[in-house]
Length: 349
Image: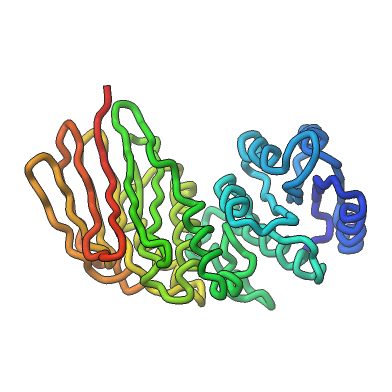
């Protein structure tokens, strides 16, 4: 699997870098090395590798700055970060930049690195097979059978055993509180109990004048809630990328995410709500997947029934289409006694 693969290592520690180079050479890889981010960027201009390994703590240019540059200039390159810190803020920031895996130094067993590289390369190869069914891209065959989580392949068991770290990671992945597209602005408000697994939210402005979003109550998923939430996030983003940032229907999105959950072997049903706001038609298309809500538009208020949970055939729940006024409206979640969560859609001058 690794023979002939071109791997670039960006690492300022010469001892650790030499160890990585020696191991990967022994596996038949073609290895190049750089001692800081600037040298790494020059190396990328010379040749695009199959995989990039990098540290976060480096001179001249920090590892996070380097990863951000790679995400902008070379989004096709899969990146694995190997860092001396397991800080959840760093992990979340790296994942937002598209890092495929995050390993913690010291690596006591070098086979952990090999397994991570193989997993990322297999996913990269299968993602290129456009004729392959979406849900099948989350499963690999052979000795590594089971789901390979795209955005976090490391230490799912550790997240189960450390709820505080899991909560910090989920909160770190929350998007900007405000975002604009044309004359429309989205903002959200979240008041949540610190001791309970949070409601998470994500959204993407689509190129066809739509806004796709979802909310998931991670407290409803038990000990596998963090892994399930990360999988949902990865499925959501991957599906929209594969569709070219165009969404034909909310039902299709929910159906494909549920296929990913079923294929995982570890994901658990959770409460969620999925929606698309069509800016041109001023309509909100919603499928409640265990989370009920209400849409307040001026003096009018529409209620959305909770329906089946995500993972329990939520794709069969009815599609709710609600009109939005010219000035917007507020979508709030119901039946969450420990939290207050709402999303505002409004026009701006």
